[in-house]
Structures are given as structure tokens and as C-alpha cells.
Length: 428
Image 1 (cartoon, rainbow, N blue to C red):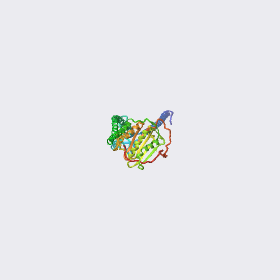
Image 2 (tube, one colour; image 1 turned 90 degrees about the vertical axis):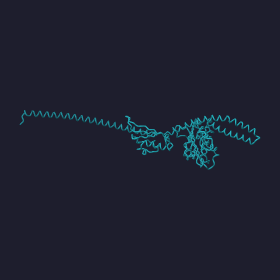
Image 3 (cartoon, rainbow, N blue to C red; image 1 turned 180 degrees about the horizontal axis):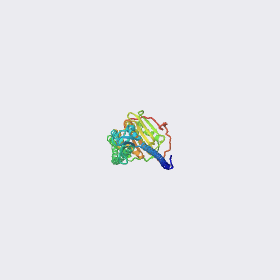
């Protein structure tokens, strides 16, 4: 039997145990609450971190899409390679310029691609079979520490720049030649006048001696021929296209064909005359523009010894936004064509591929077109034909719209067509 004396220590021990348990439970509960609060904070922080990562990923994807859009919209071809010089990707302009797909380029060495281009098409300027002129440039890609991480190859389409360079060089060359030719023409014309004067005096003095008189007449004829040549030279050096006005396009072209009728035997060549409805009139010096077109038509006829198609076309220069107010006159043939190495020289004075000819025809054409504040370009493929493209300002104001009369207009192309026969020969 337990006595009060023995119960008290046990009771105190039990009381302390319960108190310690309550304290431990309280601490445990506090720790649990603290842990729960920390977990909630961590969940919140994790959610915020995930949201931040998702936002960062979205921005990264948006930036990647933006950079890709920029890359694909560039006219410049871009090839991206890794640090081992292996192609990783390229843009659409690269595929268009090189004629190779991304699958054909990926995995190849950049060095091998560049070397292959140079072997096939030569050094700068690289002229591709499509007629596009390109320039290649390379640069290293490095990170923030300067470590090489890849290589970038840029393929620039310099066709337009090359054309402008060629045109500027041609203009400078022709201007220098024109000054020289003008000086020579004046120097020759002065003594030539004296020769003509004395020849005419001889004809009068020898009117009773027909045989001797014929010699004087030959001299006069030779002097007149030289004078015509000098006149052409002076037209080349000082073209006068001051009588500008509106001229009906179709009528002007028909008059040119009429003037060329002496070189048009029937059935030899088909002639197409295409006048766009938006170009019913031309702002030009009528007689001088006829001279330009007549020379080009005769050259085109002579370039088709086996027959072919001659096309005279007039249309807006809409494919050239910077010249949206310009028009184009084109004289095309399907003849022998002009070798590429000669195309830059066809407008040089005295340059000709004919056995007979002064080589002034196309030089005068160039000078007259320049006097109209226009330009003329030649596009030719040997064996396939030649096109001379004249670009002219549309005029000081929009011409009154006139219907294109006298020919049937093709509803699809807005052009008119007629058939005539032409002769044979070659380009001057």
C-alpha cells in the first residue's frame, strides 16, 4: 500500500514528465508551423521562379523568332558555322543566291564551300550562272570572353552595285572619248572645208574635160562622206534633244518600222510590237528617239541571219520602285547575241563587229538616250538573243490618257502585236 510519502515523488515525476511533454509538443508544433510556413514560402518562391523562367523562356523564344525573322528577311545570305567550321544553318537568301538548299549546306565545311564557289565561278566579282554577282565576306564569332565559338559567312548580292559601277565607268570613258573625238572632228573639218572648196572649183574649171572632172567629183564625194562622219561625231559629242514633247507611243514605233522597211523582206522574221496601255505617250524628242529606235531595230534585224523574232515593247518600269515614274522601251531579238566580254564595249565609239561600219551607231544611241536624262542597258546571251532596254523619265507631268488604237490589245498582257518580215546581218 502506497503511503502519501511515497506517492509525492512519483506524482512530481509524472507532473514534470507531462510538463516536458507539453513543452516538447509545443516546440514540435512551433517547428512544424515554421516548417509549414517555410514550405509555403518555398512553394511561392518556386512558383515565382517557374513563372520567371517561363517568362524568360517566352522572351527567349520571342527573341529567337525575332532574330530568325530578321535573318530570313535579309537580302544578304548568311551562313552560320560552329567553332569547327561546320555549317549549322543558313537563311533563305543563301539558298536563293547559291542555288543550294540548307540540307545540302548543313554539315559541310565553310572553307570547302567558299573554295568550291571560287573554283567554279572565279574570284571577285563572282558571277553566278543566274547572272547574279556576289561578294563573300567572313568573320569570327566570339563570346564575351573572346573565345571562338563559330564563324559567320556573308554573301552579298552586288549585282546592282556592279551595274552602277560599270555604268559610271562607261560614262566616264565615253565622256573622255567624246571630248577627244570632238576636238579631232573640229580639227579635221577645217581643212576638209578647204578641200571641198578647191574640189568644187576644179569641177567648174574642168567642165570641158569630163575625165578630169570625174576625179574632182570623186574628191567631192569622199569629202561629203567624211563630212557626214564628222557630223555623226559631233552629234555624239553634243547631242541636241531639246525639242521634247509628248508623242504617241504606237505611232512613233510604227514610223520607225516604216523607216526600217527597206530592211524588211517579207517572211524572214516575226515582229512583235507590245505597247502597254499605261504608256500611250512618250515624253521625248521625236526625231531623235526615232533615230535611236531605228538604229536598234536595224541592228536587231542584222543579228538574225537565220530569222527569228524582233520585239519592240513599251511599258512602265514598275519592277524598279526607285524609278516608279519611269518607262522602258525595249528592242529585243532572238539572234546571235553578244559575247559577255564585248557587252561593256558596244557603246564605245568606233567599236564594231562588222566588216564594214564606223562603229558610231550605238555610241550615238547612248549619247541621245543620255541627253534624254535616261539610260540604256544591254542584256544578251550568245546564241539566244539581245535586248536593249531604254529607261526614260515619264515626263514633267502625267500625259493625257489616250486609247491605243489601230491594233488589237491582248487582254492578258495589255500589249498589241503585228507581224512583219525582216532581213539578216549582225550587231554593230
